[in-house]
Image 1 (tube, helix red, strand yellow):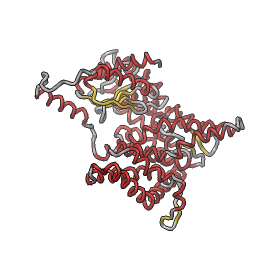
Image 2 (cartoon, rainbow, N blue to C red):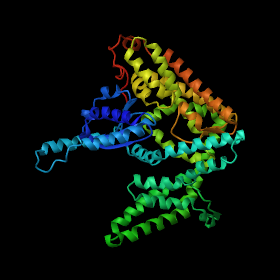
Image 3 (tube, rainbow, N blue to C red):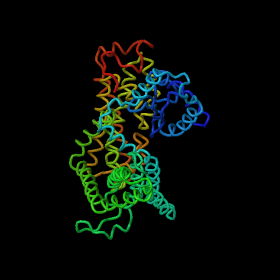
Image 4 (cartoon, one colour):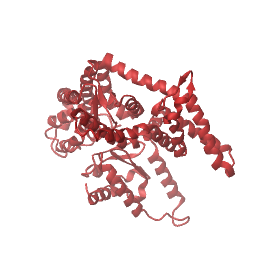
Length: 492
């Protein structure tokens, strides 16, 4: 997409979310433009969903516009520039703004910021996810480079280039703890560089000279979990120092105390504990798929869509990263990706079961390409979840695909993804395993195929009641594609 098209897309979105003055903050993740609104009522959801660049919308702690991977990183800067250019001057006191207007504006802002499911646990998971999401582009890039290096090694091509590729792919992973520490401190209100400093202790080679509980520490022991814990502790120590240290010596005392106290606790406690937890996670994942692979895959693949809907999937991000640190790939992600395959199969079945509902079929046609590439939000929130039963049958397809991949893990064909983020067909370049690339690709492709087929069959035969078919399979315009029927559960 060219710069002009990116700006045009941003310009089309802006008035539909209430204009520049209705935007409080802007951010983006891998697929979504996330904005905080002053007045939610100014948003035109239906017009927004109809834009070619928009794959769907999701309302959570922020208003999220699904643009897809790649596109969101290009459109967001243009959107930010348009908002900055179009904002009205800040009103001065007494310049015609009444107390009632200010109160109403404040109430709207408070309501816009209020998360629908803002339980402390879910909010904490979102903040943990915010630590790792900025790292995903580097994980993807380094993962693909590592896969390319492995392919060249197997083919015996360009032996002089392979070590360079290995260095490029491994450099980021060797220091990922530092990035996690930096982002953790930033997310939880501390000084980012102090979070990075205490996390750097974990990867420093000199820790091998330190004995803890009768054992030498290993550089990197505890990994991202240790870095996360160290940075969280550093934030608390820093905040405590800020409360008691006089301002005149704060710049000297606070950083010193923060790094010293947290560094000692990290060396003589957190690294050991986090290392044991990380080892246990890796051992449990290996045991789970080796001993109960088919059943474990069925449960994981079947429950992932509900976890996404509830926001609980964010708890898996540190686990994926830990597994990648330990073995070079996460065995969980290919299984969880089967949930997207079940979703695609279910959407295709909806398409064929409702031949007269042109608006819904148009939504499916526009969302399917993204679905095949692992971007499932448009299909979840635009098709299956509003309809109710097709969401359940999509989960059945995901369970079947997960069971297929899990079974091969149980038979000894273990493999995983060298990075987190992509899913569906986009995961192929990131696959790695012990049985060779050809076998690994064949198993993953087989799992996707099973997910597609079972999701389709389950939805086609069990995804609709007679009443649903009568109401939904109507002439064009009689049933809105994005609104749930009266008997269906409301969108989460």
